[in-house]
Length: 318
Image 1 (spheres, rainbow, N blue to C red):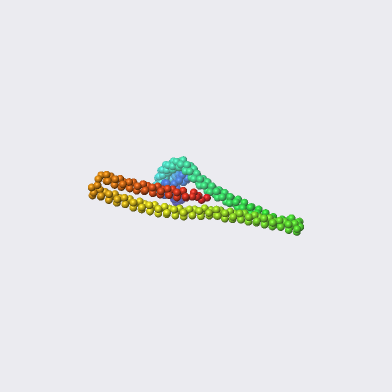
Image 2: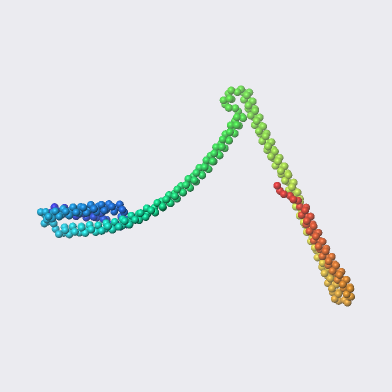
């Protein structure tokens, strides 16, 4: 009874060890560290099983060997088969571990390059941030320098003004009232002189501005007058040319009418050829005179245009 109880306890302990050792997990979830721990546990379980088998063998060979049942042998055989299956699984896990180690070696080769590139990107980003911060600090530093220089100039002007108005407190007690009055009057005189000088400079600038305006006002008036004169001359020229053109057109029409009358007379009369030639010559002469008159008018118009262009002043604003 004690042997069967111890056998049941050992079987339960072995079963518990196998359940804890080989839980239902996926092969890809088993890491290298877990594999080594499970392998150590499997070795321990195998040693415990060998120890238990030797104990059972001693019990079967001892005085209580009759109490050992066939069911116990079958259970022991089942445990051995389970152990062999777990050994086969352990070998498959060894192959999986080899594959993982190969992938890990490949990743170890690729990982440094990726890490270097990532580190380089981070360094470039940090460098850009540092440069931006440095530029901002430099700008702020320049603004502070300008502000300090402005404050120093203001303090110097204030000190010089105070020195002109009154002496320092340490010397104020040592000087007499007459000395103080003289210094005050001197400072007041200097202030009046500075005021007069500033007023004189302001007056000079005002006079210069007035003179400049007067100097530029005269050319403006001249320009306006010339523009009006030019506009009037253009109108007169246009009117003269228009009237001359009308006169020429009327003269040409009259000549054409005369030529038509001469031609009709030549066709309807029985004049001698000499009279015909003389009339044609007179008509041609009239036509030539009309053309010469028109050319003279055109020449006169061009001369008038040229004279108007010469009358325009070469005025430039400055």
